[in-house]
Length: 153
Image (cartoon, rainbow, N blue to C red; front, side, top):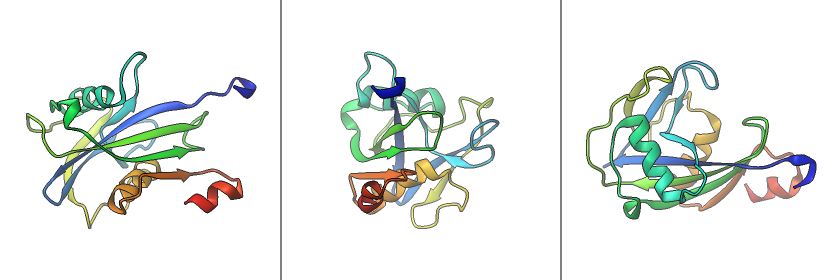
């Protein structure tokens, strides 16, 4: 990898209940006060669906069978941190448990929003994945300066 650069792999979970999407509100640090999806970095030796299910359990207390997750969108992001990120978004329509805030030190609220009326202050990175999901697009890019990437968006 040139210049020691690497790409962080993130997993995001779109918990969809009917026509509503679950979002969490960030507390402190990156995205303070803005809305986000349950998400996090993929652990070593962990599959993408297993990581997404783990993050949903850690952040909002729901248990998802990884086999029930459907790949919804992937976005390659620049400018959302010191290195590029690859965000893999999964739709979940079945889970056990009622979502709640399991990380009050990182999250100030957990709320359902209509898919056609999301809040204005969703962090751009997860919003790119949500929009890709809503538009039935499987891949997108965000934050890249080169013209070839712009043509793909």
